[in-house]
Length: 105
Image: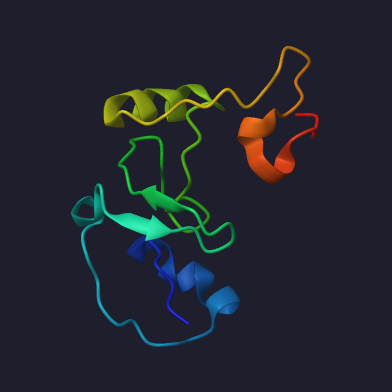
């Protein structure tokens, strides 16, 4: 398996990922606008940069949901990302949320 993580998070993630081998390193900025396939949902997304992403926990790499949060919305606007209408007035996921339709937020 191959994992993409922020170098600053590598040591902390070893217990979860195993020792493995670091194949290569790359500057995060080099990934800007690169497309990739979501490992769980299968849809294609584009890598974007955001100052709100840190290496304090997690992998240092996060998804962006322009419909669900100020920082994500602003990054989405910067990159021209679609802002799907995923919630109705009652806080229930719409058809735009795919398999999560009908789920209460």
